[in-house]
Length: 286
Image (cartoon, rainbow, N blue to C red):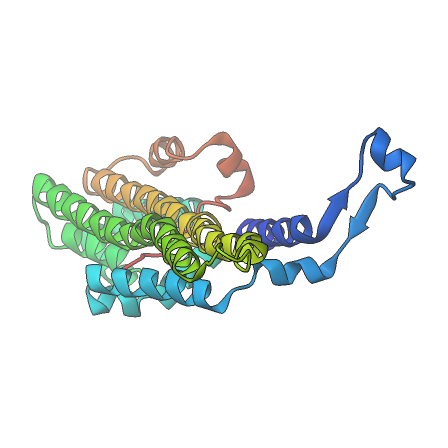
């Protein structure tokens, strides 16, 4: 479970809500009036709620995103959140150990003996990589196929992250649109000839500005972190697949298992090696 994401999002919303109701009384005037350092006014939360603003900001953002991307990608959104919340789908150290084991088997019994191990793999990419060398394909051909697979996967991941980038960019824009709608309605209905409209000017202006607030919250507390995490997961998965490519190439070339382990470990940071590969997991975001 990605605790950092949960703590970060919950903490950000918590601080925002606290800021809405918290008053900090500092200065000589506050001391003279005998005010407490901290005051809480929960009813202030209602100042930040407006149904029409929510309708405009969230509704327009979602429909523009739906208009900009294919339905298959929209259906995959629940999977995206599952990916960013899961930290243990990919383990670089685990792949290295498997590759070293395969190298030992290949040196002892030949490449054809790896076919059984390939069928045991749950990772389709790893299975494909092993079968390509079992079938005695040319090294350049094997590397080309696998690297092309990685590039196409990374492109799909970037498309998924771009969905949330789009939402992050249009949410503040429609927040501003909602503000303009509120200002137009306020000015159209305002009547200052008899002083009747001046008393409600502050309230109307506050309501008009709420949509901008909602747009900023959506962009920076909801969509922005998801896009960043999806790109992080992509980097982690690409790393694991690069390890697989280098590993199977070395196995095909007959490299010593001990040398193979040392070479593949260079793809990981020292901290990852000490942690056994934890923290470098990902899942494919399609």
